[in-house]
Image (cartoon, rainbow over all chains, first blue to last red; front, side, top):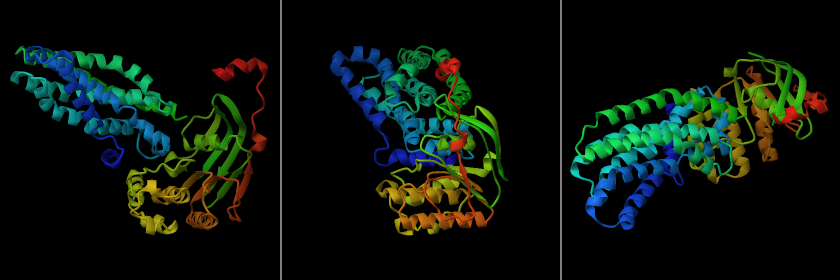
Length: 218
Length: 205
């Protein structure tokens, strides 16, 4: 399983691997928003947590269809399915690799992008913490969506439609936590909800993903 | 460590392709599957490899003894020949890739990215993976596609060596591999009967 993880990370780093794609998209969203809504820093500060969360979510979505599609196209997925690795392990590693190449860079870059949207100083801690807790859920849910649509040509649109509603709870509590952080309010409740959603998806969804993947490989 | 298949019925895309098929494979034996295109050889091999469930019948074999090689080689174009083999070695918890590199004469290509190989070289690398896995039962679907005469010989030799070590192979192929002891099974006679008109709806379920 570590072999699969290191391979996926290596592939992401090499040419055409898509590492940095999400990050670049995040940067574009965040820099374009001030052009769209105007340069008033009070307004920007007010909408910054929501924009940052939305940007992170869309950036995550962008690279989801790569999770299984490439392995399916070149036949590796069939070979992996008949290898000693359990399917649940494969999907978990795939989700982890997606988070490490997409989610984690977003978390680390968020403070910098917060600066671009003149996020008040009090907001940085809760924003980063909320992204750190929330993005793993985005990767795990996305892996489930990718497993559902593997084998469909141009399945990206269907994947987005399937996955976006499942992202809503994470988005609500994540953005709420970041917003409360900015306003200096108590953040414990959204934090607990966010952490709960993430833990729940990590615990349950790999089994669902493995099951649908087995059906899709037939 | 053998493979026993009895009274198997399989379907592709919801339509029965083969029924009542039985075969058995013992250590040191090769079985070559023949039959016209579309008769269901690939479906049969995928079913035996455990990628899909049979409609009926039983497959007695330990999945941990089988390795499947299909039409696609499962290579990553941006990884080198060595890295590709190393990856599969680690997945199957083995370490030796040198035997495989030697058997398929990949030594000169070691550090070449798999994406820069020719179709025949890719196939050789794909077949080298079989040796890396260290599993006894090889399930091969058209293994010689895009191989030249030289490479087919190389492959036949590898199969012979594998059988000599007590391995076995189930191969779907149209060409003669030069394996004198190989049993041949024509799957044509097991073609599923046309469905009753009453069952017509079931084909879409």
